[in-house]
Length: 257
Image (cartoon, rainbow, N blue to C red; front, top):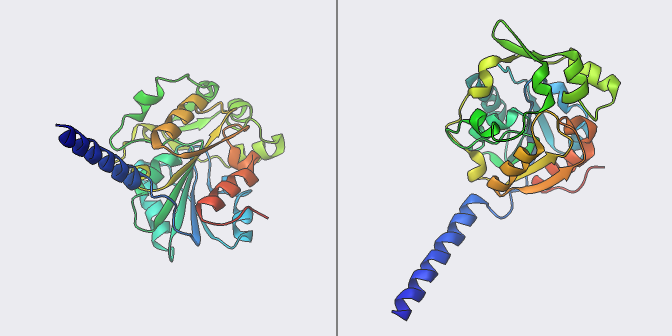
């Protein structure tokens, strides 16, 4: 009986180790490319502070102009950008863009995933129901819908969506915000790339758009390598060097210059 028990325990341990290894490849392959995916109420220019830091480190950087018309359209745009990469690629998302990279992240070219104050749904998950278990953030009151698309009012955008961002930059970001289809937020993924690829998560402690507690929950569920930034929702704008350094670490590079 002792031998049987020992054998069973050994088998369980082996399975646990194998599952852990499968869920988290120890370290990602060194990447030469980075594909950046923006979230709702933004466009590719939201990565403007991060891009030059990554390029200075020798990485090839592509920013997806995410259409925000549907999950399927956004996934297609990201797959199109990923197909043009010539080797291992770090896939990075902000905010709602995390839904996109969770779906696309299983692609063989993807070496690692980085979530910046982002959604990270599981396959088939009702993310709206999940987020309902956490505090409703102030930006919600400023979301307006017209003809099936949503935007954020100027007051809510500057005060909550772009909190911790310099006012002059926040006003530019407000001017270029991309309307998001109202149906976008209920879209469900068919895959969860974070279950099979190394992943990192940057929590924004001062986030007024996605609950920081929800971000921590997602990072913990993913077993992500996690950093916490004293930033608002747009950490990629207000803390670009910290975000760039996180991306460089996932690409097997040093810190930004």
